[in-house]
Amino acid sequence: MNSEFRPNLKNHYIPIPEGALSIEVEYKAKSSYPVVPSPSVEGTIGSKIIAPKYSQEQNETWNKMYEKQRVLVQDHLCEEYINGIHHLKFPLDKIPKLADSSEALKKCTEWQVIRAEGLVSPVNFFALLANKVFPCTDFIRHADEIDYTPAPDTFHDQIGHLPMITHNRFAEFFHLFGIAGSAAKNEEELMWFNRIYWFTVEFGLINETAHKGNNRDPKLTRIYGAGIASSCGEILYSLSDKVKKHPFNIDKIIETDFDIHHMQDQLFEISSFEELETEFRNWARKKDFI
Ligand SMILES: [Fe+2]
Image (cartoon, rainbow, N blue to C red; front, side):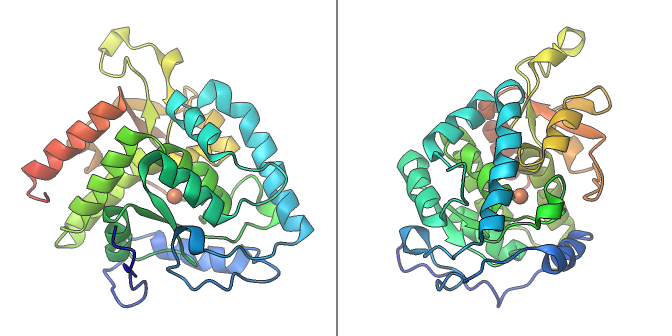
């Protein structure tokens, strides 16, 4: 990536899909901002990001969430996610610095973190992914929202997303997603990318027997989606019988609506990250996005 690359996070706008705006309103109302904000402007990349100063209570919120989440990781998250956690070495007792996480990520897949102050418009988000940078916030939810927040905070961004981006095949898919998404020409196409993102990056499951019909083994299902990985309630719920699991199928995904405010009642299972990347590439070619 060109080190002079500075995405303009404000000047582009494509209508945000229905539902997303309410996330922004809620997070503004409820998030807990650092005691001393980062002096780094939005758009600062990698090791140049200066950490804000957090209160003891904010670091304790991180600690409580991470302690609770890591108990569930071994039995519920996929091995690629667990390997990512080992690479990133998040501290337990305090909110990790974006610069440290970015450097650890760079060593694995050459992706970097870029400091964002909130939701990024789809156009800019695709452009960032296409440049192998992932936008992360540095604020954390209020202590009374430990179990659920509809808004992305630094726990969701770092614990949820970064581990998977340390995995080469997932990172290739994510890069391609940014390139293909940048070619979306209208709201319908944007909605397709929104749904693919939701049912893979945010709420994706993996099971090597996903496509084996009656011989599928439900005990093999593991989580890789960031929205599930960063929510203890979703981790347990997503693997329960209450959620219908479909074999991964992009044509079906783009026809499937979702609800951001409730637990998901249907999810899609990939059989491998090779399948995710290959199927997405084939679909994007078929639709002329790449
Ligand atoms: Fe997310």
